Length: 304
Image (cartoon, rainbow, N blue to C red; front, side, top):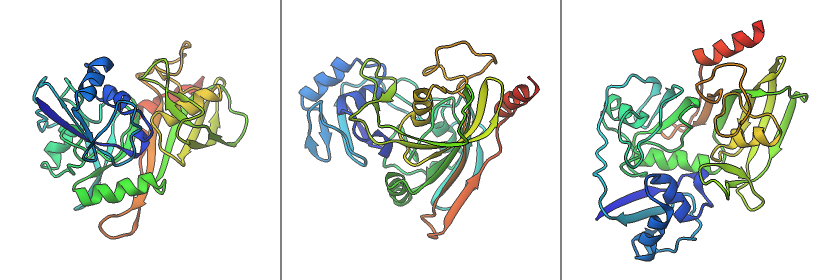
């Protein structure tokens, strides 16, 4: 038997625990996960729970299942861009195409593997062996700035700011169509799609999600925008833009049409992040340059 421990991230709150665990173990069927829960192998905050329990931020989940493979997460000398580092946190500019943390059956080539090497293993342990140091995350094909926590005290400090929506997170994106308004806000609740657990969608009983959108530049068939998150739900920008009929360029999940330009994934970059330092209590703000793939698309649009 093998014990797996997870701490629920703020953006994961409200999910059924069996769905949550199925997303963490994509190689296992949901019925298998439910069988382990029925057998009493799920403990949340030191108490057994049923499959339909709605998880909350900071819940400590312990799932015991038959051993599949020892999750040996090893340091790897993968180049990463660490733009800031102190005793408590590091700020990393993640490239497009890099997975943030390992998952069951996929234990190498991730940002976590690189962090274990470059930070000499000094990462918070709250989120378990698969997600050390990870207090929030961005999708594989989204680039940009991430806060990495180097100890549990810093992790709790940053997690509280994320939960209270006091972190400043600004993304740049290119979406389909021409947004006519210079500024608009999408306020629509998000939850797991009832027909596809890998997708999120707008659902009446979902968690409140708010995205503030500012138009930066308009093109023939696309709009370059800034998205400021008031909340930070999974796939929030991607689903909100789809909901107003302006899906992200290159989005393989939420856009089904034909792309005019070759894209490796959604054109979305976490450009700015701000938070209160766990070390000094000061406000820290970091901004990043647009990556080459993003600038190349903008250049093509401007010359089109």
